Structures are given as C-alpha cells and as structure tokens.
Amino acid sequence: MSSKAWRLGTRRSRLAMAQSGQVADAVSQVTGRPVELVEITTYGDTSREHLAQIGGTGVFVTALRDALLRGEVDFAVHSLKDLPTAQPEELALAAVPLREDPRDAIVARDALKFTDLPRGARIGTGSPRRMAQLNAYARSHGLDIETVPIRGNVDTRIGYVRDGELDAVVLAAAGLNRIGRIDEVTDFLSVDTVLPAPGQGALAIECAADNADLIAALGELDDPFTRAAVTAERSLLAALEAGCSAPVGALADLLADGQIVNEMRLRGVVGTTDGSRTVQLSTTGPVPETYDQAMALGRELAAEMLAQGAAGLMGERAH
Image (cartoon, rainbow, N blue to C red; front, top):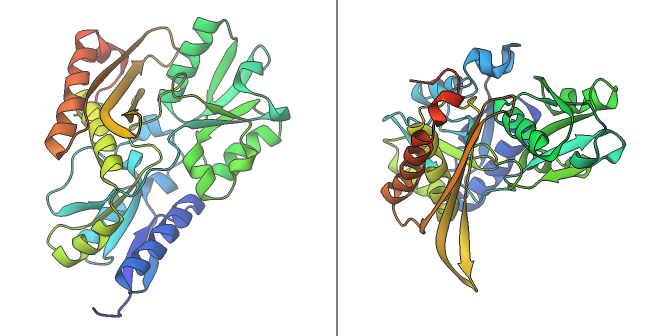
C-alpha cells in the first residue's frame, strides 16, 4: 500500500481537532499510512447566530463535504449529530466507530448537581432539545429554572459559569471526554431525564463513494452496534422531518439477557422548548442486522409519535 499520507478534513475547533486526531491515529494503525489533518472552516464555526436561527442542518458539515467532493481531502470526520439525515450519493459513510458516552452533562457553579440548583437558576444551552427536556423535567418535579440560549466553544460556555453569568451549562459528555475536561462535570444527566441528540457521542467518517479501497480501510473502524443504533435514531429524526436543531431527542440501546444481546430499544422525545408539552415514546425490536431493519425501527417509532401530535411541537419542520 502507498505510504503517501491520507488527508483528513476536519473543523478547526479544539473538539473537532481532538476527535479527528484520535481517528487519524486509528486509521494510521489499521492502514500503516500516515494521516495529516487539513483544517477547514465551516459556516457554523463563523456564524454568531444561534443554531436554531441558521437552521442547524449541515452548517458544520457542508464545507467538509465540498472539500471531499473537490478531492482536497480523502476523508472527513464529523460529529454524527451534526450530519444531515440525507446522505449524498457521491459520499459514503465509511465508518461509525464505537460510540462514546451519549449523555448530556452539567457543569455548574459550586459543584452543584442539577436537582440542587437554586430556585431561578439560569442554565445555558444552545440546544432546543435540551431546553425542552430540562424545562419539562423542571415542570414535573417542581424545579424553578430558566434556560438561556448560548453559543460558543467549550471554553466560552464553561466561562459563563466561572464568571457568574450562569449557574450552569449543559454540554455533551462525549465532547468533554475527548478534550480531557470530563473532570469539570458536576452532574451527568440520566438518559431517563434528558434523551441525547440522535447520534450524540458517535463520530461519522465520510469519504468519496467511488473509493472502494479507502472505504474498506476505514471500515476497519466501524462498530456494527453503534452504526445500527445511530441509524435507528437518525431514521426517527428523518421521519419526523426534523433538522439537527429541532427539539428531538433519541437513543437506541441494546438490551441484554445475561451475556446475550437480543433486543434494541429505541426511545424518542419531542417537546416545546418551554417544556409545556412533550411526546415521549419507545419501541423495542430485534437487534437490526441490516441498514433497512434499523431504518424501519426509527420510522415505526416516528409514526407513533406523529400520531400523538409530535409534528405540532417542533416549530419549523425541515424539508
């Protein structure tokens, strides 16, 4: 095999560079070829608007995909939750590596847990999904919180707590883990309290669909259970016709009977951002062995959620 370096397209943020660096090391190990990172600035990195305003869908992905299609990079690494649900024919999702912790995490002042925050606590998040579920939980448990929309990288967000502007911020545990800052977490939000974004904690490795050798090499990093889970979650999101910034949470996990994994459970939630109305349902089926089976699980749950009025809770639907 050639010793010429593969070119890996990545966003420039500290988190993107960290997770791309980890993938680069793994690809080098399985292929024996060096991998160099090519930094690419995306619209989502330069825009100061809130994600809900700029549409969310694809804002962190389009520039990387354009670089792939132009042949400027050989493959790209995305946070899977940023990836639009429609896959372009010219590009292949070559690998979905083993998923990190999918949970959301709280970084709060004075090392407080979520349920110990004072009345009127201001909690920062850029995610309508997190707002919807935090506010719904607060309503049902008699907590008095205010969710505040924020943007910015991890340093900026945690800085709001350090500076006393906010009592807490919510971030993805996986991201904090990948940049070595998991010890700053004061509380992990159980997935029974807040369902993560579809694909949260997972990475997507994408390359040109006509590069069979590269697809095979990258495929060494693929984790079949993670791929089945995120395929079901993203199928739910697509069937709800919701974009990445919609208030939709979903998680597929494997149910084991002793040592034998025999079923996959998919949970989904949609809610208004003030938490006043939510639709939360789950379905269980055999562990999907094919892409189509995983897709069917997501579509089935989405149909049940739409029948219960989910569409009316999402605001603007993505088409």
